[in-house]
Image (cartoon, rainbow, N blue to C red):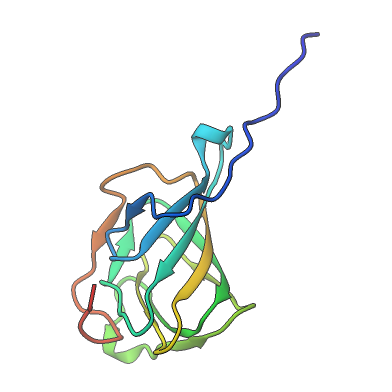
Length: 143
């Protein structure tokens, strides 16, 4: 029986690693590069007063945990008219799910950035996973 090294420790970077297709800043925390095989986690930041672009995910489910700021999240199931779904207010401590295929859009309240942890199952597969969703429930994007 051999000795197996533990997965690599990761540390949050000071600047965004990438800009997401929805326009938010992404800091990579855990993924395939750190030994995670079945999920990934990032920190998402949307500047105060900004509205993301509406998107949907082709294969991943996300779980969000709001850390700082506040704002609104619009989530809409496939096949449902977007105008019939009302946005929900979010604040630190709130947790929500973005199921596979659901369109979503989020906005940060004025005065403070909206910052949250995003856990993805399976791990984020890369470019092409997030697709434009047309109109969202929070109006025109600002990013």
